[in-house]
Image (cartoon, rainbow, N blue to C red; front, side):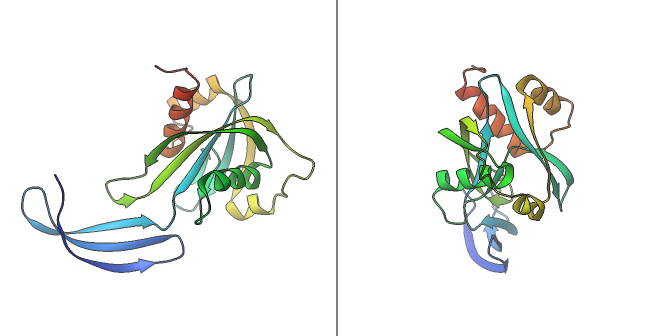
Length: 182
């Protein structure tokens, strides 16, 4: 079932998002207005995992929700998604990975957004001496970068210490790839 759109008006845009109001016909046949937020470029999420089951997390101060514990992530800004994931991991944590696997795709807030997101599993990690400085982390509001045992990460999700839905979905996709969930 689709929602036929009879017109679309852009009500706001910036380099990252476009907001439109669509005149639609709802599934029940009535007409209405539907607000849509569309990302200008896809986003990437990186689940970095060590052989001893440690996960790399960042603590971010978000304008919308305040303090949030998440996996490294960001926009592709039109860049190749894998290159963007590699950039985000390095900028947000100072780490690089030798092994990368795309483990899934998801859509954020699909009731109001068109926000394609790609999830990568990063392994064989190191922090080179030339690791990026913390200015990018400060600009982004990243206050902490920490390795956390996977068991504790899952407990953090269960106890609502991790509340970011995209982080939870990315972790789930990584666990599937690692054969931890069937």
